[in-house]
Length: 173
Image (cartoon, rainbow, N blue to C red):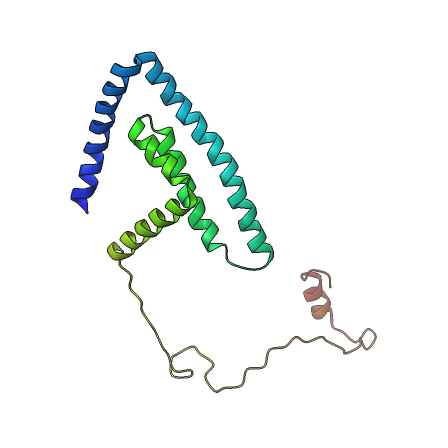
C-alpha cells in the first residue's frame, strides 16, 4: 500500500508535467493555461449542479426516515471529482470528468471502499456483567426513590428561641 501511495505521489506529477509539455507544444503555452483554468471552472459548475441534486435526494431520504447511504457515497465521489478537477493538470482533469459520470463514479467508489475495507482493522470487545455481583449495583435489591414534604402545622409560639435562630440561617422556603 505504501508503494502504491509513493508511485501515485511521484508518478502523477511527473505524468502531468509531461502532458503539459506535450499539449503546450501543440496548442501553445497560454492556451494550455487557459484550458486548465476552463476545466477547473467546468468542474466547479458540474460539482454545484450534481452536488445540489445529491443533497436534495439525501434530504428526501431523511424526510422519509431512511439512511441516505447511496447519496453519501455519491457525494464522496462528486467531491473527489471536484478535487481532481481543481488540481491543475490534464490527467487529473480526465479522471475528474470520468468521476462525474454516475455509473463510473459508483464503480470507482465501490472499488475504493473495498480496498479501504481490506486494509482497515477493527476490534470488538464484548463485556458482560451479572447484575448484583459487582459492587455498587442494585442487583436484586428494591430501590425506592422519592421526595418528601413536611405537612406538620406550627403549634403557635411553642418553638424555642434556638429553633427560631436556626431558621434564620436557612434560605426562605
